[in-house]
Length: 344
Ligand SMILES: C[S@@+](CC[C@H](N)C(=O)[O-])C[C@H]1O[C@@H](n2cnc3c(N)ncnc32)[C@H](O)[C@@H]1O
Image (tube, rainbow, N blue to C red; front, top):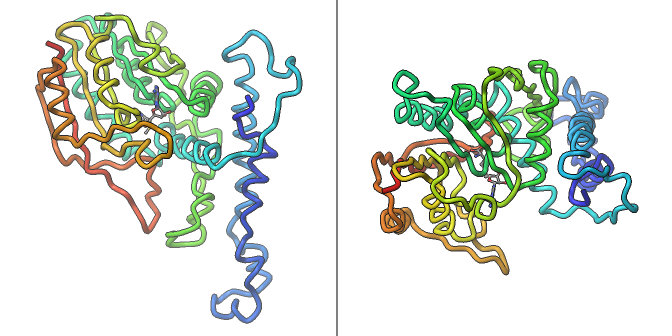
């Protein structure tokens, strides 16, 4: 619980950054075509701190709904927990979790989901078509599931689907959205208030998104959907147990990507399929005191084949984005590889 940024912590961290509007004013404003009072009020645009307060409310609801998630005792029953100031690491995790709400559970994220999740879903449907097999017996694992939308979509189609996630930020937030949110577009987040550069319009920074774009509890009653917490390589050790493993923007989160691929190979049933989509933006690259094995795609492919996969389909240079601000002047588009391997 120490690692969760509470209301106080989140606001404090945001307040530490002085607003340039409080430092630069006077004659300078004439150049901006606005009056000082408009400027102070932020004209019709909501201020960053108002937006941060709204984010706080959602974050507080997430924390409050996580109290019984992993243990039978309430965290409040324990001795007063030690409080540490939020680290840059904490804040980075928090910001990426807020942006993951856009990707996974908002209408704004639909195009990004279509480009990343749909190719995987279509491949699963091609390999295990509902008119030729009983999909309710086909098991699909999604490691690094984020806020669970890809796994949820696969379960919605009738497959047994399990998402696996390691980050508490993602786990608490996916628990909230999957188990506590029902009403479509009933909650609001301001995902871009932490981005201070590359806005075309001032109002772009305080743009809101609503979530969830669908009712997460609308899965058919017969569906078999679960989320499991823990490190992928530690949790999944049982040999020959999955029909399909689907990884999306995941394999580059490894310290050693070969370890992930060995695990995938081991847990797949013989003839089972691994579908992968994403870049090779190795997360531990350049991190002090962290092991990081950064293979090129060429070397990775050789390792995949040598480990015992037969590559059935390979698409190079597929363009996709990850938690992208579509209004930003700087947009990063990954040219990634997608690959289907069969365990032989
Ligand atoms: C780049 S995100 C991709 C999330 C999601 N698959 C998507 O496409 O939006 C990678 C996710 O993998 C999770 N992750 C990283 N290492 C992991 C591990 N060892 N076991 C399980 N999940 C892990 C991270 O917490 C993060 O949510």
